[in-house]
Image 1 (cartoon, rainbow over the protein chains, first blue to last red):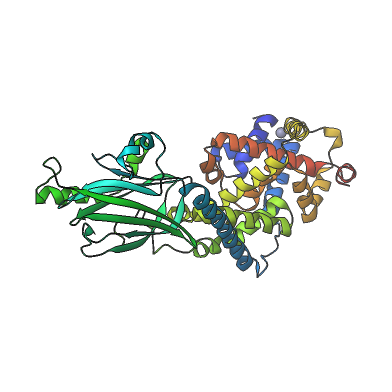
Image 2 (cartoon, each protein chain N blue to C red; image 1 turned 60 degrees about the horizontal axis):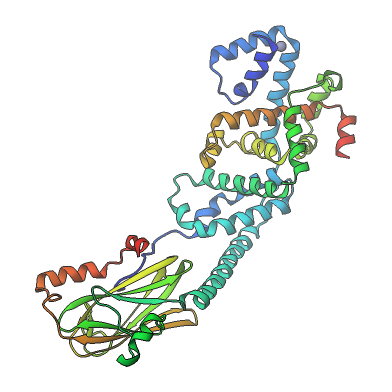
Length: 248
Length: 191
Ligand SMILES: [Zn+2]
């Protein structure tokens, strides 16, 4: 072993990564080489000194202050993000898609052709539903960023029920929106003549409301299902498949 | 019951404080080694908490929170100093530093006895640490002072262990070089 080898292995030796034979070889070299012996002594002493370097203790109050400041920073960020998102973006769109049924703008048929080409106002949509059967109505909410702790409220007109929630005209729950499209699929059972369904999203004191006109048509053979497949369809519909949104 | 929630939340998760508080003292000590002052160390730890709070869920799933948190602090510090020193001049200076490390000019060295004396002077060692580049100082603080392993550091950014070892080698060589300078020369540089 020469001095260069010795210095190259010094770090591994300090870290205890060196095998015993290599340690012995270094010791043999250091026994004959004063410079390397001194290097080893200094490096070892420095290693020990570094471990012993003092550090001040944490100020007793620091933990409380630091956690409080972190929570405050997060609240500030969230509040700003939510407010901006609701004001500038969620306003943008609720699209109502009823599977297999096209939208009809609620205007006299005389101007229907002209209006159909123009962007439909998002505030009120009409969807045709068939009475006497369960069918999914999908509401799509676009949000430019994730929002948490949204209160979602759905109000149903008389004669319309949400599958598994018979007799309930109003349902509300807490939910989160992911960035991009969020589809809420409502398996609706329409008994009567339809009416206006409203969905609202509330975040703090910000409220965004959307309404959808459910217009009934008599059930046709194409949409009628037997009771068993109706339940299966309803189960499918109650699930929100986020994966599908990428293709929407 | 929510009929069709978009997303479920975990109700029984431990609080952010419960996850981090047991490690706070050690994180602060590491931050102090990096920055050199209590005030800067507090600022660094504070920034870390702000950054980690939104990642609470990830932290809940971490198997070994101590090195994970220390690594997050290390990365935050390195990011901060890199952002501060992105000017071409600073980069060139640190580059030269790295290349000069292995050159120890014999006639400038203090005698072995002088070095041994300096090694018993904590303030001298602390001052030499502050003359290292921030990244070299951080590596020595991580491994040689606070006793975290290079493997624990390598985990974070997929840095090869060999790269970390050679960086630590250069950092140590530089520190030894600084400690072996005669007092007069060192005073001239630091003063
Ligand atoms: Zn030698």
